[in-house]
Length: 150
Image 1 (cartoon, one colour):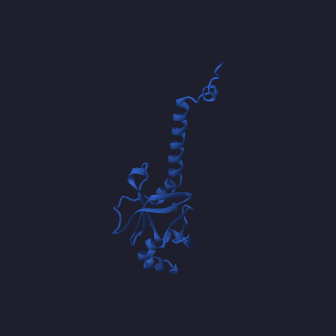
Image 2 (tube, rainbow, N blue to C red):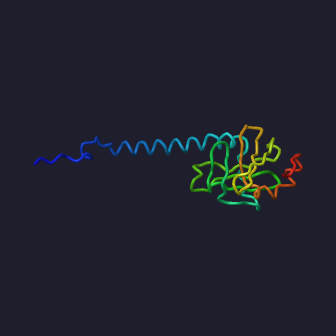
Image 3 (cartoon, helix red, strand yellow):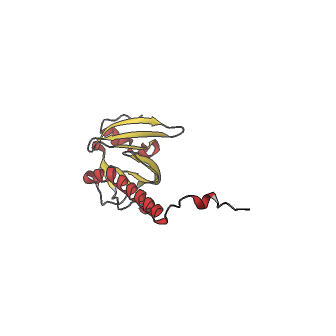
């Protein structure tokens, strides 16, 4: 009786270095995409100030087309909206302080159970999506810029 080799042994094996190279490629691609929008904002709004007193850590939100799930830190102050990334995932992305007058339009967005706002910036043309509760302390600052609270 002849024993046929296992089908798994007959299949060509993918070299280990290939999987390592593929993983490294996707990691570098992710870092590049993260830097793309954030770097555009950092050219205009980079800050060296500490976070404001109204500060929420590990929030969910969009900056451009990147969704930061539990890694976005958001603060609200008289000067503007403060954004930073959780240090473990920041990849050397600097904190931002976007002044209120840089916001050209605000639109409400209702997810399933969470109310959010789209903040459209004038320069660069980037959209930021954050929760309504975070913007609550900014009512008076937004009103001074001509935005009605929704």
